[in-house]
Image (cartoon, rainbow over all chains, first blue to last red; front, side, top):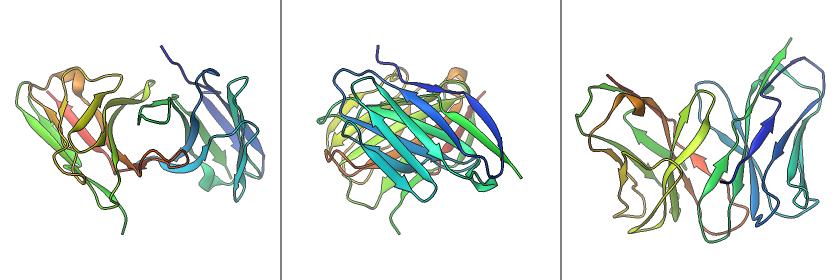
Length: 113
Length: 114
């Protein structure tokens, strides 16, 4: 059974703090790793799709790194703002010729002003 | 506007009464999926489809049916709903087998089975 784990489960930070969280996934048969941002009462929105070991992606104050050999990805938020409050999901894509995605349970981030 | 549209957004119904949740995308995506989201369990894939007339089971397919007769539509059918299918459901689409294409999600359907 393929398992994707995210830690921590939840995080409370002050505005201006930088923060990071982890997604762990099977290191064998890796194809791609997705990150999504999910605000309450909305639908998940894509942040990054990462495919190469050592990949680093950035979108504004949010960035992500990928280590496929050891099976983890980090998501970083620099200078957190209250609007960053959301649940951050990662999903492991099993292979090229399938749409099967296995999601972690998410890290819920709350940023206090 | 590129979007995935689900209907209804909310539904309260009773055990055993067949229901269908529709999903339509206007992005000409090949791949479509259904997920359910339950507290503490995250998003779990119910079924996915990689092309017209091609569907595959996800992690939690029991009690659900799907069909993909046209590229844009991927309805989710509950033939005999039960209370344990009370959940928040998301439809999603993805362009195809390109490695860097994310899921595009609909707004969700909150289903309550009494």
